Length: 358
Ligand SMILES: [Zn+2]
Image (tube, protein in one colour):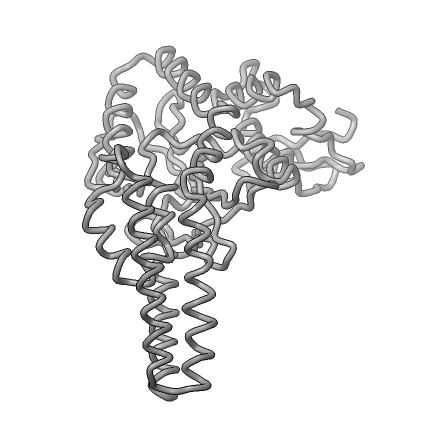
């Protein structure tokens, strides 16, 4: 590799690192702009780093705004608190073993379990909230959870957060797209054609100028946003002189919100309908079909909250819980088919099967 190529590779790597975020393993990120539906980015939940997972923000131009969503990570059950670690992994912690403690963005729950949240503020908030829940009666926990569920399933508030994030960062994202083309396109071509020389220096000068503009935009947009943006002035200095920071300057703004993130299902109408419905069905199945579901008269609390939300949104039960098409007994949780003499699904911990007639 020539010096130029090495420099280019190092710079591309620095840029990708700047696109990485460590988030809760069950988190969702929506990426989009003013128009059309937002795309969904998920973390690599197989990779566990500091009790969270890395997520690669949308990296290519046109640069997009991001907004953060989370399924319910903590659900109070009668004997224990159920904690969602990843999409497929939950643990239950007995109430008397629960000792929540926040350390930066990490929430310690008992001797063995910890979980990364999206900010130190959120970790603090949940440490306090779970301590409060622990001291409540089961009925009080039930209504406390429903209240939290209702607040996080506000579709209008979630759409507003996304729109605000897109509007705030509009000009910064445009500058970032120009910078991207300039860094990875124009400068490389010029260097390739002319080698070291005045013209490359001039191109680098233009780059610096655009970075200054980005830094000024950043300071203007983030005025009054503290404490959402830590080390705001230092960051502005970095944006002015380091291209990778200038390219990702909008992320610091769009992801600065320390408000409680919405539930991912509050993004109905924001993300594509099929992705939303797929997620709604999965979350419903997991919440509704727990061992004993066919005998229990009341719904588990998470299913109760979801059902109330679907009712509010006018979503028919056949949409979020489509009846099985199979002529054999089917596990309502994982969808596996069974022979007629089998009554429970062992891979779902003994969930009763749904008979084809029902
Ligand atoms: Zn199953």
